[in-house]
Amino acid sequence: MRGDEVFACVVAKQLPVDRAARERLATDIVAWCLQRLAYYKAPGYVAFVPEVPLTSTQKILRGQLKDLVAASLATEACVDTRDLKKRVAA
Image 1 (cartoon, rainbow, N blue to C red):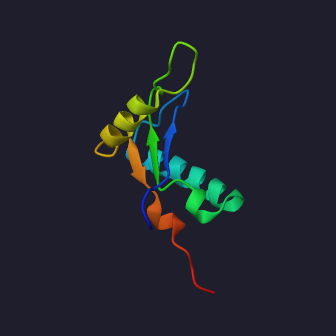
Image 2: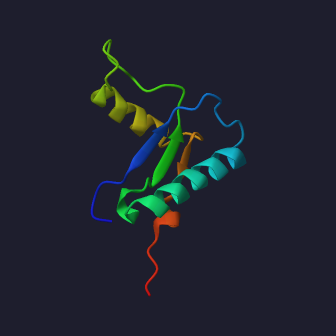
């Protein structure tokens, strides 16, 4: 709401093939997070990627990860889950 949004890059053994399967899995991931985390810590976007860019010592390459996120936003692999995070007034 005030800036950055959490973006989850999920590396699965078998990537979901169709859009409906990706949306169901992304919804399940966000629902699990919302039960255990504050709403602002749950991912607003979930992208299913084949791999995360790593260094030779298996650390995440943050610069390339930002590029991966930017490229993933425009693809079908990314699911927008921000609507699941809307807070309900009591």
